[in-house]
Length: 142
Image (tube, rainbow, N blue to C red; front, side):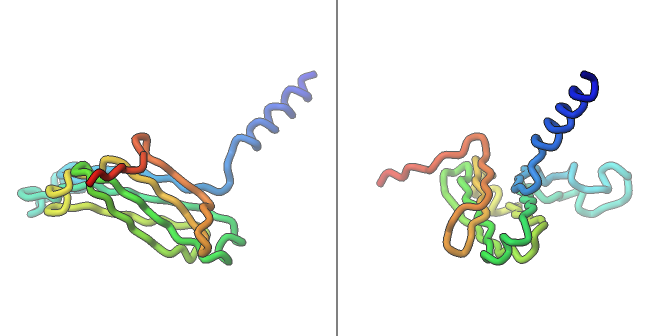
Protein backbone atom coordinates (compact mmCIF):
# COMPACT_ATOMS: atom_id res chain seq x y z
CA UNK A 1 0.00 0.00 0.00
CA UNK A 2 2.82 2.40 0.88
CA UNK A 3 4.63 1.73 -2.43
CA UNK A 4 1.42 2.35 -4.34
CA UNK A 5 1.00 5.71 -2.59
CA UNK A 6 4.58 6.73 -3.43
CA UNK A 7 4.11 5.77 -7.08
CA UNK A 8 0.91 7.82 -7.23
CA UNK A 9 2.74 10.83 -5.76
CA UNK A 10 5.53 10.53 -8.34
CA UNK A 11 3.01 10.37 -11.18
CA UNK A 12 1.33 13.55 -9.89
CA UNK A 13 4.66 15.37 -9.62
CA UNK A 14 5.78 14.50 -13.14
CA UNK A 15 2.40 15.24 -14.75
CA UNK A 16 2.07 18.65 -13.10
CA UNK A 17 5.23 20.17 -14.57
CA UNK A 18 5.13 21.73 -17.99
CA UNK A 19 8.36 21.20 -19.88
CA UNK A 20 7.77 23.94 -22.48
CA UNK A 21 6.45 27.38 -21.61
CA UNK A 22 6.22 31.13 -22.15
CA UNK A 23 6.11 33.43 -19.13
CA UNK A 24 6.06 37.21 -18.66
CA UNK A 25 7.24 39.18 -15.64
CA UNK A 26 6.42 42.84 -15.16
CA UNK A 27 8.77 45.12 -13.27
CA UNK A 28 9.30 48.75 -12.34
CA UNK A 29 12.40 50.74 -13.20
CA UNK A 30 13.20 53.45 -10.65
CA UNK A 31 15.73 54.37 -7.97
CA UNK A 32 15.21 50.96 -6.33
CA UNK A 33 16.45 49.31 -9.55
CA UNK A 34 19.93 50.76 -9.04
CA UNK A 35 22.49 48.60 -7.24
CA UNK A 36 23.95 51.74 -5.64
CA UNK A 37 20.69 52.16 -3.68
CA UNK A 38 21.48 49.01 -1.70
CA UNK A 39 25.27 49.19 -1.58
CA UNK A 40 25.55 52.88 -0.81
CA UNK A 41 28.13 53.56 -3.51
CA UNK A 42 28.28 56.97 -5.22
CA UNK A 43 26.15 57.02 -8.35
CA UNK A 44 25.25 60.14 -10.36
CA UNK A 45 22.06 58.38 -11.51
CA UNK A 46 20.71 58.61 -7.93
CA UNK A 47 19.95 62.32 -8.51
CA UNK A 48 17.85 61.70 -11.61
CA UNK A 49 17.08 57.98 -11.84
CA UNK A 50 15.39 56.36 -14.83
CA UNK A 51 11.64 55.92 -14.48
CA UNK A 52 9.70 53.30 -16.35
CA UNK A 53 8.51 49.73 -16.59
CA UNK A 54 9.75 46.54 -18.19
CA UNK A 55 8.26 43.30 -19.42
CA UNK A 56 10.59 40.31 -19.39
CA UNK A 57 9.47 37.38 -21.53
CA UNK A 58 11.09 33.99 -21.02
CA UNK A 59 10.46 30.95 -23.19
CA UNK A 60 11.42 27.32 -23.54
CA UNK A 61 10.41 25.47 -26.70
CA UNK A 62 11.04 22.01 -28.10
CA UNK A 63 13.79 21.73 -30.70
CA UNK A 64 11.25 20.89 -33.42
CA UNK A 65 9.50 24.25 -32.89
CA UNK A 66 12.52 26.11 -34.27
CA UNK A 67 11.86 24.58 -37.71
CA UNK A 68 8.63 26.62 -37.82
CA UNK A 69 10.62 29.89 -37.46
CA UNK A 70 8.77 31.12 -34.36
CA UNK A 71 8.23 34.80 -33.59
CA UNK A 72 7.51 36.35 -30.21
CA UNK A 73 4.65 38.83 -30.61
CA UNK A 74 3.92 41.24 -27.75
CA UNK A 75 0.62 43.13 -27.93
CA UNK A 76 0.42 46.08 -25.53
CA UNK A 77 -2.27 48.38 -24.23
CA UNK A 78 -0.83 51.41 -22.46
CA UNK A 79 -2.55 53.39 -19.71
CA UNK A 80 -3.38 56.17 -22.19
CA UNK A 81 -5.35 53.51 -24.13
CA UNK A 82 -2.99 53.48 -27.10
CA UNK A 83 -1.74 50.15 -28.38
CA UNK A 84 1.57 48.75 -29.52
CA UNK A 85 2.94 45.59 -31.08
CA UNK A 86 6.51 44.31 -30.76
CA UNK A 87 7.78 41.35 -32.80
CA UNK A 88 10.98 39.50 -31.93
CA UNK A 89 12.30 36.52 -33.93
CA UNK A 90 13.17 33.41 -31.91
CA UNK A 91 16.26 31.51 -33.01
CA UNK A 92 16.95 29.48 -29.84
CA UNK A 93 14.81 27.01 -27.93
CA UNK A 94 15.41 28.92 -24.66
CA UNK A 95 15.70 32.64 -24.23
CA UNK A 96 14.71 35.94 -22.67
CA UNK A 97 13.54 39.17 -24.32
CA UNK A 98 13.00 42.37 -22.35
CA UNK A 99 10.85 45.28 -23.53
CA UNK A 100 11.54 48.52 -21.66
CA UNK A 101 9.39 51.64 -21.52
CA UNK A 102 11.47 54.55 -20.16
CA UNK A 103 11.44 58.26 -19.28
CA UNK A 104 9.69 60.41 -21.95
CA UNK A 105 7.73 57.56 -23.49
CA UNK A 106 6.79 56.24 -20.03
CA UNK A 107 5.53 59.69 -18.97
CA UNK A 108 3.57 60.10 -22.20
CA UNK A 109 1.90 56.67 -22.11
CA UNK A 110 1.63 56.28 -18.33
CA UNK A 111 3.00 52.73 -18.35
CA UNK A 112 1.50 49.36 -19.27
CA UNK A 113 -2.17 48.73 -18.67
CA UNK A 114 -2.12 45.16 -19.94
CA UNK A 115 -0.34 42.89 -22.41
CA UNK A 116 -0.47 39.61 -24.29
CA UNK A 117 2.59 37.66 -25.43
CA UNK A 118 2.39 34.89 -28.01
CA UNK A 119 4.89 32.67 -29.74
CA UNK A 120 3.62 32.16 -33.27
CA UNK A 121 4.82 29.97 -36.09
CA UNK A 122 5.72 31.46 -39.46
CA UNK A 123 2.19 30.57 -40.63
CA UNK A 124 0.65 32.46 -37.69
CA UNK A 125 -0.39 29.51 -35.52
CA UNK A 126 -0.15 30.26 -31.79
CA UNK A 127 2.30 27.85 -30.14
CA UNK A 128 2.37 29.37 -26.62
CA UNK A 129 0.51 32.30 -25.07
CA UNK A 130 0.62 34.43 -21.91
CA UNK A 131 -1.99 37.08 -21.09
CA UNK A 132 -1.90 39.78 -18.43
CA UNK A 133 -4.80 39.58 -15.96
CA UNK A 134 -6.64 42.54 -17.50
CA UNK A 135 -6.05 41.54 -21.13
CA UNK A 136 -8.90 42.14 -23.53
CA UNK A 137 -9.01 43.31 -27.10
CA UNK A 138 -9.35 47.09 -27.12
CA UNK A 139 -12.56 48.31 -28.73
CA UNK A 140 -11.91 51.45 -30.74
CA UNK A 141 -14.80 53.85 -31.28
CA UNK A 142 -14.43 56.51 -33.94
